[in-house]
Length: 229
Image 1 (cartoon, rainbow, N blue to C red):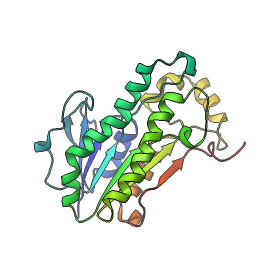
Image 2 (cartoon, one colour):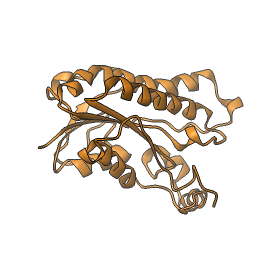
Image 3 (cartoon, rainbow, N blue to C red):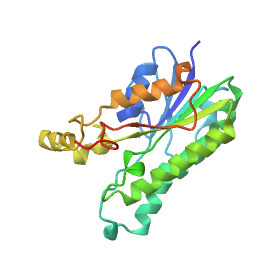
Image 4 (cartoon, rainbow, N blue to C red):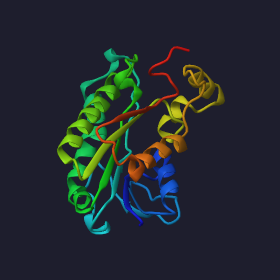
């Protein structure tokens, strides 16, 4: 049976890779500021900070929701203004909350459904210059566990915590081969991640193969969060 999957921010990076992976066997809806480039995906214009998601553009039931929008503000704490923390929370946490509150009835209409959020390895592994994004994504991890308890057993809620992935969001850190190699050398597996690798994990969490998993934060980080190279 084809599932109805809504991907927020699915027009590039991990969201686009996930759309591409799911589109052949599912009904994929991409809600983003720009249309999805993936054939067969239904695009819905949506800015998580500016307007409400158009529920009329979605089916009555959803078997999956993936919230992809995120930010990477890496600066020393003394240079971070409170407005930076607010903007990171607005995009990473409040945008996710607003979106989920709009579509939760559709997820609960399904026999079983799955929600996937994104965190960062920097929440569980302290890293310098990550104060703002780690704080916002730490809130996502708390939300993940709380909602997993509240929405069980019909709705599963999990999150993925990657390290640096080669996406447009990370372009300023990976916009040359030299930067890519230097970033890779910081990981025990000696490279940065790909959107397809993270999308594969998200697809797993949406599938029946993960039907006994909820409230989990899964790391895909090249080993940087737990190993010394």
